Amino acid sequence: MKHVSTGLYADIKTIPSPFCYNQKTFKAFVLGADPSNFSLGGEETKVLHTVFGIGEGDTRYFDQILKNLKAVGLSKEDVYVQNLVQKYLTFETSKKPKVWKKIAKDWIPILKGEIDSIDPLGKKPVLVTAEIIFMVLFEKKEIQEIGAQELYKKGPTMDIQKFKNNLLERSVFPFYRHKNYSLVGNDWDAYKKFLINQINK
Image (cartoon, rainbow, N blue to C red):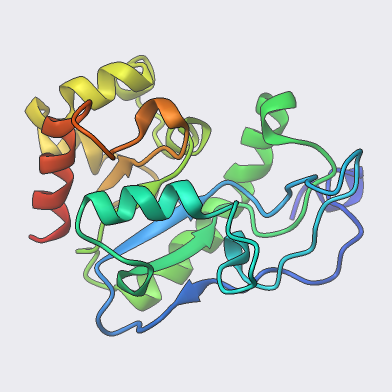
């Protein structure tokens, strides 16, 4: 890792384990940014044993994602959940986006190796929970220049190949946990139907 010695990683030895109920039957990957959460206040991050703290009692990290999963017909038993950056950082992603993107680029080959070993044919899509993850995976400006709302609006009419032209070399779709992109309700019906179709191909 290029950035290990720069003080950007927190001094926490453990790395949250990915969550997957059954690697043979899951339907999609769900990708978070990193395990840092600072939910204890100040600069202290809560240490999680599993990505998003799944199964640890505190459901706040995964609640909105789970609601979106249910909206497209999935449960947590249907997904493989992992973070792009798998170590804890000393800062919040949103406060240093350029720095986070540089770190994330180091992790992309590691993540790609992991998911390719689990799904070598590349058929299972990756659902990304934050826009910054989506942008770092796609290098082509034709995708990067489309804002989040436009992606949700245009997604169902876009050439599916555009969603595959990324550093993971498989279908990657926005699945943002932010409340503005909640798939519960009718606000994003066309996009929701599009995702259901892609997940069940």
